Length: 100
Image (cartoon, rainbow, N blue to C red; front, side, top):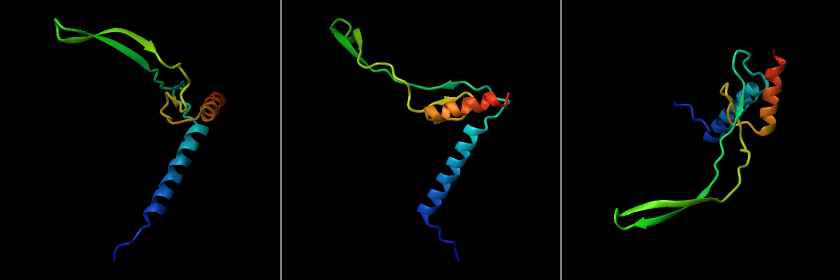
């Protein structure tokens, strides 16, 4: 007889385990690792082209930035901890400094 598992319960258990591991990595950074917070952002541009009949090509004529550079919602650390909120990133950095 196979053991039936509730997929929702299994998923909830997995999420709880991942959240606990994430919280542990934030609060107890590896003292042997380099800790530097980083984030990735995207700034959008509107790009304009003109058609060149002789070469049958579109050639970029200008670009215009359409939004401002903003801080990312989630941050990462060079040590490998990913997906931290700004508060979690500060906690992680403070904990890494306290280990020294």
